[in-house]
Amino acid sequence: MTDGYSQIPAKERLETLKALFPEIFDEDKIDWEKLKATLGEDVSFQDERYMLSWAGKSDAFRTLQQATSATLIPDRNESVDFDNTHNIFIEGDNLDALKILQRSYFRKVKMIYIDPPYNTGEDSFVYTDDFSENREDYLRRIGEKDENGLLTASGEFKNNGKDKGHYHSNWLNMMMPLMYLSKGLMKDDGVIFVSIDDNEVYNLRMLMNEVFGEENFVAQFVWEKRLNRENRKEVSVRHDYILCYSKYTTQNINRISKLPMNAKALANYGNPDNDPRGLWKSDPAHAQAGHGTKAQFYTLIAPNGKRHELPSGRCWLYTEKEMNKAIEDNRIWFGKDGNGVPRIKTYLNSKERGLTPETMIFNKDILLAEDASTNEKAKNDLKDMFDGVSVFNTPKPIELIKLLLKISTKGDDLVLDFFAGCGSTGHAVMSQNLEDDGGRKFICVQINEPYDIGSEAYKAGYMNIPQVLRERLRRAGQLIKKEAEEKIAKEKEQLPFGDVSQTQMPDTGFKAFKVAKSNFKQWQHIKGTETKMWQEQLLDFTNSLADGANNENVVYELMLKNGIDLNASIEHKRNIYLVDGKRLCLMLEKANQQTIDDVLAIGPDKVIALDKLFEGNDQLLTNTALQMKDGKIDFETI
Image 1: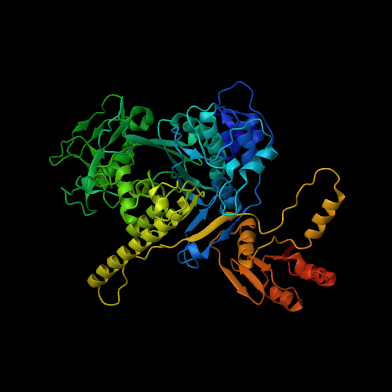
Image 2: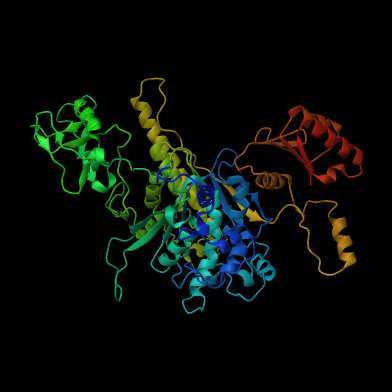
């Protein structure tokens, strides 16, 4: 009852709805069409109201709501330390990938960073620009790929030139479903950072207001991407933007953390009065009057009797009782002679220490060496890593991404990048883990975008961007591992015999996966009354597995579709697969009484068996179902 009124049921329900679906509110009112669209209903946005609208928006919502049967298949040959690493790289369409990850990674991602196409008029990306086609034709078209997994001519990367009639709409149709899906993966205290430039920053801001809610806007960072003036006709552009939104805004969620102290900030700390609590700096003891209560307006009397009045429009940070207690505890500084303006001591070892991030990110600023975070430096560093070959034109500097990691992640937080490009985010995560002994994990997603035949990358043997990304992660991992080994060796030289080095070896591997069709046959809707076709399909479904499916691929698909993440343990023994301990048991090879007895002895939470294993033995299937029920085990066949 903070506003003097009791909480009415309608208001409480509205607040609950706003916490769950902030995107359905416009100017604090429910947008019923957005609510219906969010819940999967077919709508068309036509009413006049304050909102972002564009050609194809309704189709984009339908794209968002359309489920996918696709899965992820492991690629051990392209992985590094597959069985031990917790990092993930996914090659394939990011829309499909985000849909596949929804069940297993719902509310698990702490930070998302993406560097999407800026829509400069020269970008190529996947989008639909035929707004007259029906939904079924659209889904069929965007799903068409050749035997190498590349999009076919009808669904290929298209240049979104500024001369096109739906120039902005095409970009928004690509971005909107991705934004909604990424929000579902974020933890309640999660944040998302999106790099962008002037071409779409205004549309992106409105889109993210719609998806995340305007109240969840955190900051619009301005990043100095180059140090020198660019020779342009009118204005030299030296900056890009990074929009930051949180999933929720509540008093209990700390969205952005302070940065570690740098040398310049540490220079402000001293101890002129030999305070036993250590180094400190002084901060103002008053604040703007609008933030204070009546108890924070008074005349402060110093220990020497001097009276201190408040400046106009200010109030003391503490009430008089709290202030007097702080004075007695020597936490208020009145200068060396005791006559100075009262200031509050902030101790170096206090929880509050650190630097508040600023919206202006200059290269010479906190934690960034001179020119270390420019686009040009990042491009040259990547070129050096690839033996002089220019493999990517616009890589983001790992120092920039590390700065974002510092203010939004810690410990073993999960980081997602679904426009992974050349892998800067994965590289930054590994590097930051070495720097602060963190255990962060990443998921990077990159579509199979081919290189132009005349490009340096193609001539060097790289057919597409995912090849470069994987190679960049391999080489970066090797460099970071070597740096960690050197750091550990130096620490051991300085430690007494038997002591353990403080530096831990970071995870420098990654599991490689590819977006692929389901390992299980998909029921096809047959138009009309083609009896023969129906009969053929029914006969074909006596074996639910698709041609070419293998057990490992099936295991990972069933893991994902049962909400188990890709790093869960998998144990194969005596014809059964145990996933994540006893959470899931898979029968993919044999079904006999011995196998059933083995499963019952383990007592898993759920068992999934291939229906074909019981072919010709209905009695075994019936008995198995009864025995599982008696053992309180969820049992199903597919």
